[in-house]
Length: 165
Image (cartoon, rainbow, N blue to C red; front, side, top):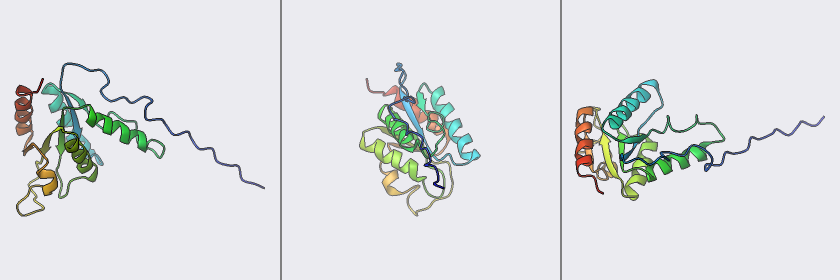
């Protein structure tokens, strides 16, 4: 007896739904990047996101502004995140950990290549390299590295005061 052919779900077109930050306001836009693989990381990145929003920014937060990841929507999530970076003015990246999350590193590299203003947040006291807080390719691409949420608040206020346009 022949086994039935399994039905594959149709891949979701990334142009359908999930349009990051489509409503343009006069507020600047920030992409909030960082690892989000456990409850603690999600709690911290959501705290960072709330601080950025309180500083007057509309924010894109990947795990909030995308559908839950499954085998059929990874391309959609990639395109949504990339569009979120394209549409932002500032990227705020959580660089905590003994090494930077590889997704966050990609987001920073892409944002740097597209001319975004980059703020790295590193509250972790551990250092991986003798004279660097994080990998030199990341550290040298940042416009600003801050070591606390209070410093992040100041950095955002300073960027807003000098905001182009």
